[in-house]
Length: 296
Image (tube, rainbow, N blue to C red; front, side, top):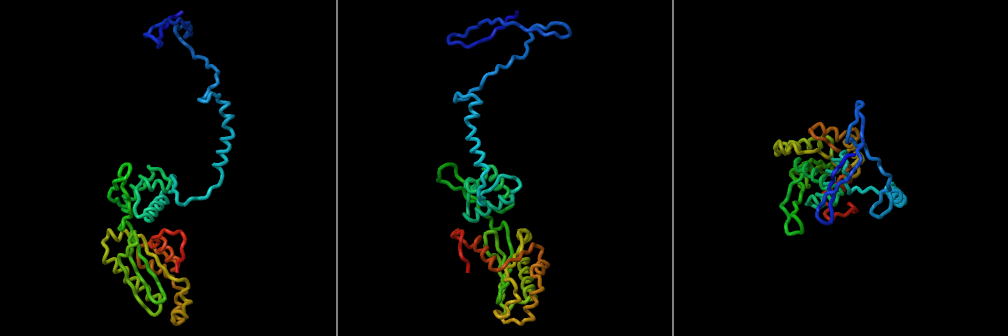
């Protein structure tokens, strides 16, 4: 028999008591080893939770609730395009969503952006740091006088991105350079009796030359592309413009997007003029923030 001493707390002064426990023996190489203690056998006792029910009873009790929660999670839900996602594969989508919200509200702090998008505060911090590094957003002065810590709102940087636009109309054409918030930096306007392919190319060439002369290399590197807004099927305008049929027929085989793309190093996009006007009204002219409106 071996004697082992152990300390136990007591209500009064600490005292030591002696517990006599039998020591097990184990043989190694044919010789007994004193003091070796083997693994204690696990007692099969039912675990009780805070409510006093065993684990099995708790599972049986939570069965209907778990089934109801699973059914609710599997139920199809409508997609909310105003909410972001924390998946790494949609980083660009989240950045566009954040930029759209800032454009809509003009200035937003990170806490409000996280609330509107449903993204975590850490994700928003990473996105805003990247957008600020890219020069697309800037910090405004710290807002004080409110509950909690002063917040720092973010706004779009007007110099963050530039874009070119060409409008081809029945009686005139426009060439513009706009900044990231819709401000017009350069504009060129020309009036004619009717549009011709050669005249439009010459007009765009003069506009590009003017922009290249006025912008420094750093600003020119911020140009993201050129957009063309024009009506479809210009060759059907004979009655409206009074242009000769032979002139209008040139538009049938003229690739306006492809020919203008030869003149500039940036991506070129073509859009119907009415569709482009609605898009511009939605992003830049819709100050009332209406979701539905009629454009004339």
